[in-house]
Amino acid sequence: MRAHRIELPTPFAVGPVNAYLLEGEPLTLVDTGPKTPDAQTALEDGLARAGASLADIRRIILTHGHSDHFGNAMWVREHSGAQIFAHSADGPKFAGDRWVIEHLHRHFILAGLPETFLVSFRERMRAMRHLFDPITEFHPLQDGDTVAMDDDRLRVLHCPGHSLGHICLFHLDGVLIAGDLLLAEVSPNPVVEFTQEGRRIATLPQYLHSLRRVLLLNCEVAHPGHGGTMGNPGARIRELIGHHEHRKEEIYRHLGREPKTLVALAQELYQDLDEINMMLALSEVIGHLDLLAEEKRVSAAGRGSAVVFRAK
Ligand SMILES: [Zn+2]
Ligand SMILES: [Zn+2]
Image (cartoon, rainbow, N blue to C red; front, side):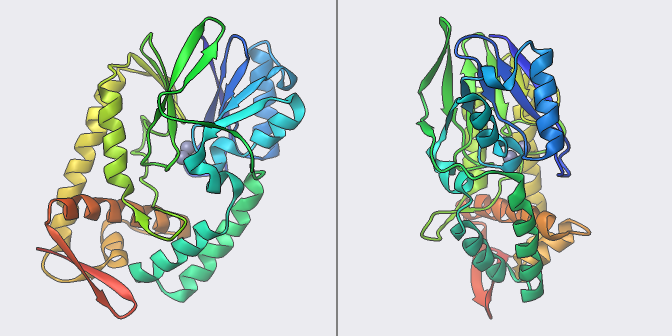
């Protein structure tokens, strides 16, 4: 399988995002970049370098529902007639459903954030809506599905944790299209998520499970969602698992016997958090508290409108 990496600029701190053009029939684009003029130009230029154009694309596969990855999917579809494939668990994010924000709002109150933060967070989220065209219909992919390319095939792996509907694509040659499961420079964030009914999902335990599952595949090469192609992905997976083990113990030590809100813990561990980084920091912290709760090492109780945690 030949994958052309096309780097696309994003307005996010993570830097550029990768789309991959997979050679063969049907011509397939994995991820699309955010809906900005810069990313659209870079995508067209990258396709031209690979000897293709937007109109040639027949199939779009989305690794997950973050706008830097799927923002241009509808735009590509309009210019090509390509079909869009993705995991249905990220359907609400592709569609830009409002309830996602409502549940986050309640989570922030329980975490101990003031109302002023919630107002500015909503503004930030509203400003980000122009980075994608909502996708309301797509072909659902499930774990174990195969995606055919000429006589070749890729296996779909459902790898939740960074995003509920995150998928990777695995080729028997040992090549993994990894999306944001595996990044070289940063530890992918286990972004906080909810069911439509508002139940919070324990995303970090899910993410670690996904990592362990992919580790067993003994991949030789991984094409990540950000950064260059990665040799020996197994070493990076072990590193990420070790990082979370270490971080969990660090958070346990910070917790101590004094009850603390999620926000108090996040502010001890991270400095200068803007609205988006606060959301990511809270996701990291609650993720590790979920791991500690599985080990029965942490207890939670209500205090005012917030929840406080302490070490057992
Ligand atoms: Zn992502
Ligand atoms: Zn990403």
